[in-house]
Length: 215
Image (cartoon, rainbow, N blue to C red; front, side, top):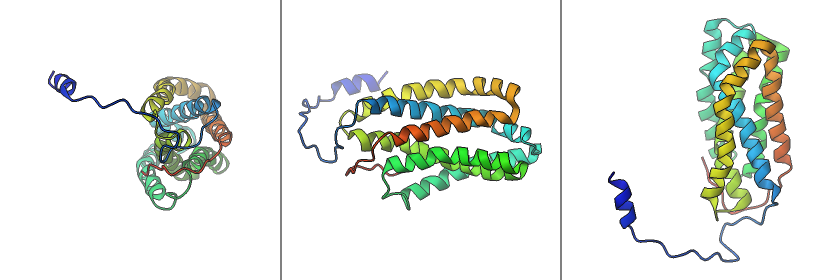
């Protein structure tokens, strides 16, 4: 009630003239880049939403006790934070696209380890999934900026985020139904989606850019 009238009283900024050499702007990206990134974010956020809703139950299906499943699932949050600290430190000089490719691979790696080792690997799976998810939340902001540059960043981010939000909202229901029919085999779906995202990211070229938005 108060903020909107006050914002309307603010002076309007002059129209922005786009120069040919905007500082920090990346080279022109292929037209398919938006579709590729929309697919990447939609698939990875589907996995994120599914794991957020069903991870303890999934670990129980894998053979873990209820206590062990809850304890392992509780490590997802710390793993996310730790991965973001690594991104801010060791991966800070790495192109965001390279970091995103690595992030998309961590969930499938954890799924393979869990499938081969059994319930003894639930902690490794939870940590790898959490680390990948932590890096992906950073990549969602840094990759579009690095590929397309700062011009139109807000609008572009909103467009890319729309399908991701939709799949994340649908994932708890869909993944839960798949778990009822497939059991632990449902990890093949989540790992396959993450692998497809990683392959899609390989289709984008990591261009040098002066802009990098740290964690």
